[in-house]
Length: 229
Image (cartoon, rainbow, N blue to C red):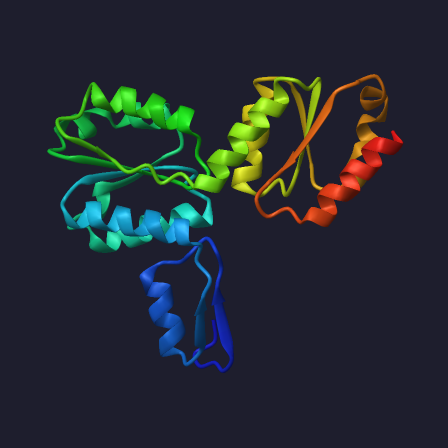
């Protein structure tokens, strides 16, 4: 980022740390904050837990920009940055089990695209080793609803086609969930269906779903292509 700038700087939906906001404003840019409301909610919950001296656990993918922002904001409010931990799975929590057991209070928040099943699994585990556990269910409601509806569709489909970016956390999670129910392929655009032509032509019931940010026009092109196959 240049030392001094003119124009507009947009904060994407994944959010950013407070330090980034300050840098943008100090350099003279007009700031437009497009952080998703649900992501902002996770940040605020994580910050509140950190301020109240909880050992904060963030369930999510450490490398994801949303999780990076949540972690940075929580660490800003914590007396000790080491009291904020990102866990992508239960195995990561087991590695610090002694730290969790020694904490007076443990607080839990989730990356917005996580699943309820994973939340329940983690809560069951933490409940057995924590003195005090405070759980903030910060899963995005629309993501949760999409997952529920897609699972219903998958139960009556021989193949599920998930449309959306392979870099999108919510789309990738959706594909992972459905693959446990029925055969599932994850594509970004209709041309990728050519790789599955033989397979698709022999299947009667095909379900189509998509990630939150996938445009309707892309979904319709996929449906049109499936009809020709």
